[in-house]
Length: 454
Image (cartoon, rainbow, N blue to C red; front, side, top):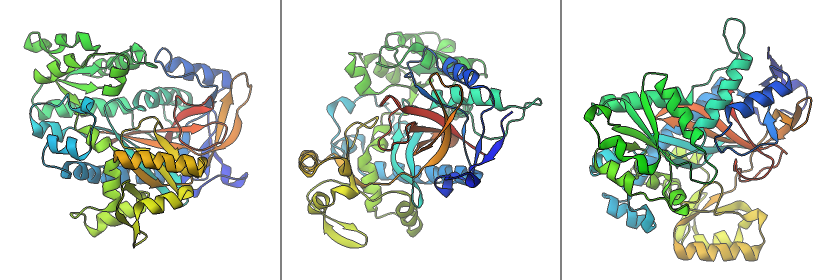
């Protein structure tokens, strides 16, 4: 059985926020390796040559902090996005959204806005002074739920004692999402029948990725079904008792357009009373422009709001030729950004999976200025303070190894929020100890795990 090991007395243990203890492996490495790979089989999740040997354990206070702040900041993100204009048309113009995003809105604007923030995962790093929220991913298609569910299934099996007790705590992503759909159905006076809408034709995704969640719902008191787009008429064009009136929009418009999938069946389902969350308004919350607006400050913010943002959000500004503030002083934004490449990161408003991100210290001045020129002309990018990610010690299992080995890694945390409730803490890191933009589908040393409270 696994035990808590004090890494604070055996050498470097990284930043204090991560605590001084970790869970030791609870089984031989071959068993752990086989169980982890089995749980995520046939989902499209990339092969990882470096796997975790145990869940990443952090103190309860740290775990509580990241979710407490996530909920508070999400409220400000939502208000900031909706405040940009009183209508959807106004927001599309204010955000300079591509034409492809002007679709899949439900007919009732109140419903559209109310259910935009049901599925959320911020990206958080631990900086020198603690958690820093780099962006908010607001979309039914965000990664982390399936992966965290599968990792937790393994860790709970391996770490349970003879009486079924485990030495850590973590919410179950699927359990919280199931409760979200129960509450949504009750609020709308609809049958709790859930459509999970996605496609296995998107690169890197297999049908089991969606089916795992549908199977969980079906075995926990909900009726659920995975729908490919062409199957969606079966969700609404049928007798009332067979309809699926609520569902998860587990896809992005760009991903479907990339593989030639038609979104018309989704619009038909929405027009015929099937509510898929998060709604299309989530795109405004998801945009990094919202982070820029929030960081700069909004007229309606209280002093407490301002302190929260200053403490947990890195300085972020929408890139354009204008004046702004930094450290209480007025600056000309473009000249400042040009001169301070080493301090900053350039991000496209709707970039995903680390795409359209330029870390100033990793490129030369000419490349930096070229990227800035293009971004300033477009007006849909932000610059953000670079946060030096702090580390924690983890035990990893390499391909072919008989024993775990220790590495100091710089994880990117992904606290999952479903219906405003904590739903597990996904995290990604480079198993070789390097830092930077971490994508689970990136370099060969990319790894993932879940964080638990001890």
